[in-house]
Length: 297
Image 1 (cartoon, helix red, strand yellow):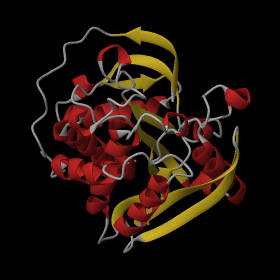
Image 2 (cartoon, one colour):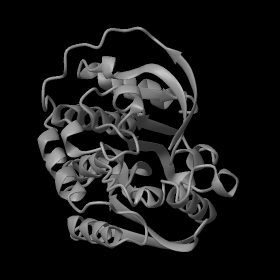
Image 3 (cartoon, helix red, strand yellow):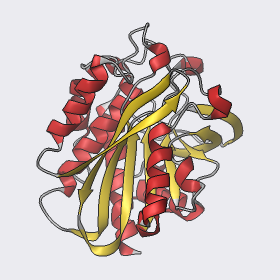
Image 4 (cartoon, helix red, strand yellow):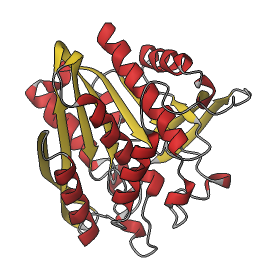
């Protein structure tokens, strides 16, 4: 993921942290899922850790409707096998809400024991706990699909291959769903990335769909956590863009400014001690309320 332009910042005081689980979301459980996942260690493509991460997701969703979307990516080091995971929870209304994250770590950081606790780990745990709220019944609104993307991170660097050494999984799936007509069913695409840190401050990505930003803001206001959302706007390259480019209503819930002067991002300092159950509770409550609001539209 790369930042290109910081567009604006609003000087608002961050309110006191939200009370836990006002709507029943268990951020502590999401954190434990993340801890178990991150304990795998580095999980860059072609590594033993990557195979373990795949096995982890298969086991986590073995009783759900799980699809494995295997493909081969053309990368600077040659063809690399990758795999997206899609978990479907059916709803009573037409359409689909997609909630996504990426789960792998950087091939280029394989020599520094980069475990990506916040960068891939936290949101994997978050979506696993959200699944606990979705399974076991037919949803009142649209179906919700959880997507775990492979290959968001660059193999060599973000600018290799004419700027295409990144977002392999999301580009593959967006093209696949565009070809088979699935994109037309998607009411909203919600990406989560790096939103588990203690000082949660979710940016507005400049290409987010406006009405979807307003809906998330409405959800945050319900739980009195609006100070954690959209205080500044930035342009961020991430897994939502292949869907934005195809006209899908999309939003990237991302907190790119991670650590003092961004000093934890893509370093061996991105570890579990930087994460917060409270932040994951805020994330979970707001996302579930957003799903409810989307179902009511």
